Length: 225
Image (cartoon, rainbow, N blue to C red; front, side, top):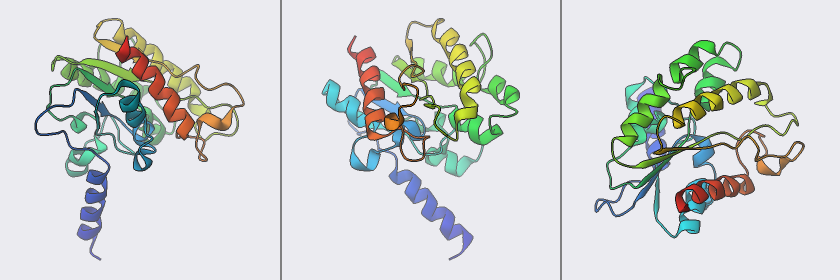
């Protein structure tokens, strides 16, 4: 098979991981993000699926495994690997979104991340790719729920050494959310008890079914309130 065929096949798979917005714009909740949002989608137990069941409202899930906030390849970016490009027009009351983990973990290996962190979000929360994306989402009139990341339980997770970067990212997002009462930050920093593997999948990176449900419960709580 030619390289172009592989690329096309990959793009079809990526598109298969995203849900189309209904043409009648009847859905009022949109979900965007990376694998933390998308995991367990095939079994209808992703974060968005649980939010949908808890609220009794349809949720259109556009999240894609491996997606980043900063992503410059045009074709695969449009297919969903760019989180900002996952957005589709609709009558959204709420937009649930996460991102930044792949930018830091895959983009700099959690070693030389200062430059990437600044590109994502400045210390004061006012500049960078994340504030730009959320500003555009807020201009649609929707409320935005920005979801943080699960922490390692301290049991050999590949992301164990990203703890400091994850904490710093959340500090900056907290400052950003304080500037706009239409942005609601949901931290997951305290969700995983130390030594408890049950919130993570076997790779100790992505959420387990239990983890996705716990994340969804916090998100649904914000929307319900």
